[in-house]
Amino acid sequence: MTSRERTGSDGVRAARALLSLVEEHSAEDFQAAEAILAGQKELAQVLQLLRDFKRQQRPEDQEPVSIERLREIVRKEVIELASAHAEIEPMIRASFHRLIVTLPNSTIEDTVEQALLYLDNRYSATAEKVFRFVDLLRIASFNAGPPHRERIESLLRRLAISAIAENVIVLPTLHSIAQLRTIWAPSLLPYKAQEARQHLAERLVEDAERLASDKIDDITTRLLAEGLRGPADRAISETRRRNVKKAHGE
Image 1 (cartoon, rainbow, N blue to C red):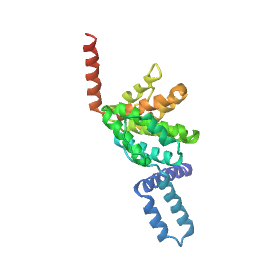
Image 2 (cartoon, one colour):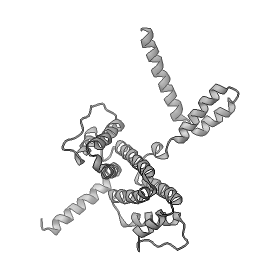
Image 3 (tube, one colour):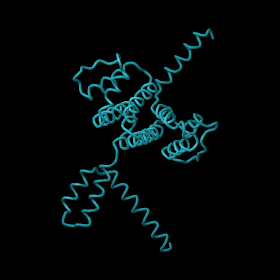
Image 4 (tube, rainbow, N blue to C red):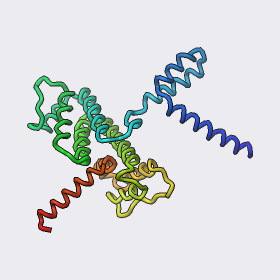
Protein backbone atom coordinates (compact mmCIF):
# COMPACT_ATOMS: atom_id res chain seq x y z
CA MET A 1 0.00 0.00 0.00
CA THR A 2 1.39 3.40 -0.99
CA SER A 3 1.49 6.33 1.42
CA ARG A 4 -1.27 8.02 -0.58
CA GLU A 5 -3.48 4.90 -0.39
CA ARG A 6 -2.76 4.58 3.32
CA THR A 7 -3.69 8.22 3.88
CA GLY A 8 -6.91 7.76 1.93
CA SER A 9 -7.81 4.65 3.92
CA ASP A 10 -7.12 6.44 7.20
CA GLY A 11 -9.26 9.33 6.03
CA VAL A 12 -12.19 7.05 5.26
CA ARG A 13 -11.96 5.44 8.70
CA ALA A 14 -11.74 8.84 10.37
CA ALA A 15 -14.78 10.12 8.41
CA ARG A 16 -16.80 7.06 9.36
CA ALA A 17 -15.82 7.42 13.01
CA LEU A 18 -16.83 11.09 13.01
CA LEU A 19 -20.19 10.39 11.36
CA SER A 20 -20.85 7.63 13.89
CA LEU A 21 -19.93 9.97 16.75
CA VAL A 22 -22.31 12.67 15.51
CA GLU A 23 -25.14 10.23 14.85
CA GLU A 24 -24.95 8.45 18.20
CA HIS A 25 -24.75 11.50 20.47
CA SER A 26 -27.06 14.43 21.15
CA ALA A 27 -26.31 18.13 21.55
CA GLU A 28 -26.64 17.64 25.31
CA ASP A 29 -24.01 14.85 25.22
CA PHE A 30 -21.53 17.14 23.49
CA GLN A 31 -22.34 19.96 25.93
CA ALA A 32 -21.65 17.68 28.89
CA ALA A 33 -18.35 16.55 27.35
CA GLU A 34 -17.44 20.19 26.71
CA ALA A 35 -17.97 21.01 30.40
CA ILE A 36 -15.79 18.11 31.48
CA LEU A 37 -12.98 19.05 29.07
CA ALA A 38 -13.29 22.82 29.46
CA GLY A 39 -9.63 23.01 30.47
CA GLN A 40 -8.54 21.74 27.07
CA LYS A 41 -9.48 24.77 24.99
CA GLU A 42 -8.99 23.36 21.48
CA LEU A 43 -10.92 20.15 22.22
CA ALA A 44 -13.68 22.09 23.95
CA GLN A 45 -14.05 24.23 20.83
CA VAL A 46 -14.46 21.13 18.67
CA LEU A 47 -17.13 19.81 21.04
CA GLN A 48 -18.89 23.18 20.89
CA LEU A 49 -19.00 22.97 17.09
CA LEU A 50 -20.45 19.46 17.28
CA ARG A 51 -23.01 20.62 19.84
CA ASP A 52 -24.08 23.53 17.65
CA PHE A 53 -24.28 21.28 14.59
CA LYS A 54 -26.65 18.87 16.36
CA ARG A 55 -28.82 21.75 17.55
CA GLN A 56 -29.07 23.15 14.04
CA GLN A 57 -30.30 19.85 12.63
CA ARG A 58 -33.99 20.25 11.99
CA PRO A 59 -36.38 17.83 13.74
CA GLU A 60 -37.83 16.78 10.38
CA ASP A 61 -34.33 15.63 9.33
CA GLN A 62 -34.10 13.36 12.39
CA GLU A 63 -37.55 11.77 12.64
CA PRO A 64 -39.38 9.58 10.11
CA VAL A 65 -41.83 11.54 7.99
CA SER A 66 -45.49 10.65 8.48
CA ILE A 67 -48.80 12.44 8.01
CA GLU A 68 -48.85 13.03 11.77
CA ARG A 69 -45.33 14.47 11.64
CA LEU A 70 -46.29 16.70 8.72
CA ARG A 71 -49.29 17.97 10.67
CA GLU A 72 -47.07 18.85 13.63
CA ILE A 73 -44.51 20.61 11.42
CA VAL A 74 -47.28 22.64 9.75
CA ARG A 75 -48.78 23.56 13.12
CA LYS A 76 -45.43 24.72 14.51
CA GLU A 77 -44.37 26.65 11.41
CA VAL A 78 -47.72 28.39 10.90
CA ILE A 79 -47.89 29.46 14.54
CA GLU A 80 -44.35 30.85 14.41
CA LEU A 81 -45.01 32.73 11.16
CA ALA A 82 -48.34 34.11 12.36
CA SER A 83 -46.84 35.20 15.68
CA ALA A 84 -44.27 37.28 13.79
CA HIS A 85 -46.64 38.61 11.11
CA ALA A 86 -49.97 39.95 12.40
CA GLU A 87 -51.70 39.80 9.01
CA ILE A 88 -51.45 36.02 8.74
CA GLU A 89 -54.01 35.01 11.37
CA PRO A 90 -56.86 37.06 9.80
CA MET A 91 -56.04 35.45 6.45
CA ILE A 92 -56.27 32.00 7.98
CA ARG A 93 -59.60 32.88 9.56
CA ALA A 94 -60.83 34.20 6.21
CA SER A 95 -59.69 31.03 4.43
CA PHE A 96 -61.71 28.92 6.88
CA HIS A 97 -64.67 31.29 7.10
CA ARG A 98 -67.69 29.45 8.59
CA LEU A 99 -65.71 26.21 8.67
CA ILE A 100 -64.03 26.61 12.05
CA VAL A 101 -65.33 28.09 15.29
CA THR A 102 -62.99 30.29 17.29
CA LEU A 103 -63.73 32.88 19.94
CA PRO A 104 -62.87 36.55 19.24
CA ASN A 105 -60.16 36.43 21.91
CA SER A 106 -58.74 33.04 20.85
CA THR A 107 -55.00 32.71 20.37
CA ILE A 108 -53.20 31.94 17.13
CA GLU A 109 -52.54 28.48 18.56
CA ASP A 110 -56.32 27.97 18.89
CA THR A 111 -56.96 29.19 15.35
CA VAL A 112 -54.31 26.96 13.77
CA GLU A 113 -55.37 23.91 15.78
CA GLN A 114 -59.03 24.41 14.81
CA ALA A 115 -58.04 24.72 11.14
CA LEU A 116 -55.99 21.52 11.28
CA LEU A 117 -58.74 19.70 13.16
CA TYR A 118 -61.22 20.69 10.46
CA LEU A 119 -58.88 19.36 7.74
CA ASP A 120 -58.33 16.14 9.71
CA ASN A 121 -62.06 15.52 9.93
CA ARG A 122 -62.96 16.72 6.45
CA TYR A 123 -60.45 14.66 4.45
CA SER A 124 -59.87 10.94 4.92
CA ALA A 125 -57.20 10.10 2.32
CA THR A 126 -53.59 10.88 3.18
CA ALA A 127 -52.96 12.65 -0.14
CA GLU A 128 -55.89 15.00 0.47
CA LYS A 129 -54.60 15.82 3.94
CA VAL A 130 -51.13 16.51 2.54
CA PHE A 131 -52.45 18.95 -0.06
CA ARG A 132 -54.60 20.79 2.50
CA PHE A 133 -51.92 20.94 5.19
CA VAL A 134 -49.40 22.27 2.67
CA ASP A 135 -51.92 24.84 1.42
CA LEU A 136 -52.30 26.14 4.97
CA LEU A 137 -48.54 26.37 5.40
CA ARG A 138 -48.17 28.20 2.11
CA ILE A 139 -50.85 30.73 3.03
CA ALA A 140 -48.66 31.66 6.00
CA SER A 141 -45.30 31.57 4.22
CA PHE A 142 -46.46 33.54 1.16
CA ASN A 143 -47.70 36.35 3.38
CA ALA A 144 -44.60 36.31 5.56
CA GLY A 145 -42.40 37.31 2.62
CA PRO A 146 -39.96 35.77 0.08
CA PRO A 147 -37.28 34.59 2.57
CA HIS A 148 -39.87 32.63 4.55
CA ARG A 149 -41.48 31.32 1.38
CA GLU A 150 -38.13 30.03 0.10
CA ARG A 151 -37.36 28.43 3.46
CA ILE A 152 -40.73 26.66 3.58
CA GLU A 153 -40.43 25.39 0.00
CA SER A 154 -36.97 24.04 0.82
CA LEU A 155 -38.42 22.36 3.91
CA LEU A 156 -41.21 20.76 1.86
CA ARG A 157 -38.73 19.43 -0.69
CA ARG A 158 -36.64 17.85 2.07
CA LEU A 159 -39.75 16.27 3.54
CA ALA A 160 -40.78 14.92 0.13
CA ILE A 161 -37.34 13.37 -0.38
CA SER A 162 -37.38 11.72 3.05
CA ALA A 163 -40.96 10.48 2.67
CA ILE A 164 -40.22 8.86 -0.70
CA ALA A 165 -37.00 7.26 0.53
CA GLU A 166 -38.66 5.89 3.67
CA ASN A 167 -41.86 4.54 2.11
CA VAL A 168 -40.84 0.96 1.30
CA ILE A 169 -44.48 -0.20 1.41
CA VAL A 170 -46.01 1.83 -1.41
CA LEU A 171 -42.67 2.54 -3.14
CA PRO A 172 -40.84 -0.74 -2.53
CA THR A 173 -38.31 -0.59 -5.38
CA LEU A 174 -35.98 1.90 -7.03
CA HIS A 175 -38.09 1.47 -10.15
CA SER A 176 -41.22 2.62 -8.32
CA ILE A 177 -39.38 5.75 -7.15
CA ALA A 178 -37.97 6.42 -10.62
CA GLN A 179 -41.47 6.16 -12.11
CA LEU A 180 -42.56 9.23 -10.14
CA ARG A 181 -40.70 11.27 -12.73
CA THR A 182 -43.60 10.65 -15.13
CA ILE A 183 -45.50 13.30 -13.13
CA TRP A 184 -43.54 15.95 -15.08
CA ALA A 185 -41.60 14.05 -17.78
CA PRO A 186 -42.42 11.33 -20.35
CA SER A 187 -40.02 8.71 -18.99
CA LEU A 188 -38.82 7.41 -15.65
CA LEU A 189 -35.62 8.65 -14.03
CA PRO A 190 -32.55 6.56 -14.98
CA TYR A 191 -31.03 4.83 -11.96
CA LYS A 192 -28.37 2.32 -10.97
CA ALA A 193 -29.24 -1.03 -9.44
CA GLN A 194 -27.32 -0.36 -6.22
CA GLU A 195 -28.25 3.31 -5.84
CA ALA A 196 -29.39 4.38 -2.38
CA ARG A 197 -33.09 5.23 -2.10
CA GLN A 198 -32.29 8.59 -0.49
CA HIS A 199 -29.92 9.52 -3.32
CA LEU A 200 -32.45 8.54 -5.98
CA ALA A 201 -35.16 10.59 -4.23
CA GLU A 202 -32.81 13.59 -4.10
CA ARG A 203 -32.07 13.25 -7.83
CA LEU A 204 -35.78 12.99 -8.51
CA VAL A 205 -36.45 16.36 -6.91
CA GLU A 206 -33.39 17.92 -8.59
CA ASP A 207 -34.71 16.69 -11.93
CA ALA A 208 -38.09 18.31 -11.27
CA GLU A 209 -36.41 21.58 -10.32
CA ARG A 210 -34.43 21.49 -13.55
CA LEU A 211 -37.13 20.39 -16.01
CA ALA A 212 -40.29 21.81 -14.45
CA SER A 213 -39.21 24.80 -12.37
CA ASP A 214 -42.44 26.64 -13.17
CA LYS A 215 -44.43 23.81 -11.54
CA ILE A 216 -42.01 22.83 -8.80
CA ASP A 217 -44.28 23.83 -5.90
CA ASP A 218 -47.14 21.66 -7.13
CA ILE A 219 -44.77 18.81 -7.95
CA THR A 220 -43.23 19.01 -4.48
CA THR A 221 -46.66 18.63 -2.90
CA ARG A 222 -47.51 15.72 -5.19
CA LEU A 223 -44.22 13.96 -4.38
CA LEU A 224 -44.78 14.48 -0.66
CA ALA A 225 -48.28 13.03 -0.99
CA GLU A 226 -46.92 10.04 -2.91
CA GLY A 227 -44.26 9.49 -0.26
CA LEU A 228 -46.79 9.53 2.57
CA ARG A 229 -49.34 7.23 0.90
CA GLY A 230 -50.18 3.98 2.62
CA PRO A 231 -52.01 0.78 1.62
CA ALA A 232 -55.31 2.22 2.86
CA ASP A 233 -55.00 5.12 0.42
CA ARG A 234 -54.83 2.66 -2.46
CA ALA A 235 -58.08 1.09 -1.28
CA ILE A 236 -59.75 4.50 -1.08
CA SER A 237 -58.57 5.42 -4.59
CA GLU A 238 -59.80 2.10 -6.00
CA THR A 239 -63.21 2.50 -4.36
CA ARG A 240 -63.60 5.97 -5.80
CA ARG A 241 -62.54 4.76 -9.24
CA ARG A 242 -65.19 2.04 -9.15
CA ASN A 243 -67.84 4.51 -7.96
CA VAL A 244 -67.04 6.85 -10.85
CA LYS A 245 -67.38 3.98 -13.31
CA LYS A 246 -70.74 3.01 -11.82
CA ALA A 247 -71.96 6.59 -12.02
CA HIS A 248 -71.13 6.61 -15.74
CA GLY A 249 -72.69 3.21 -16.32
CA GLU A 250 -69.40 1.52 -17.15
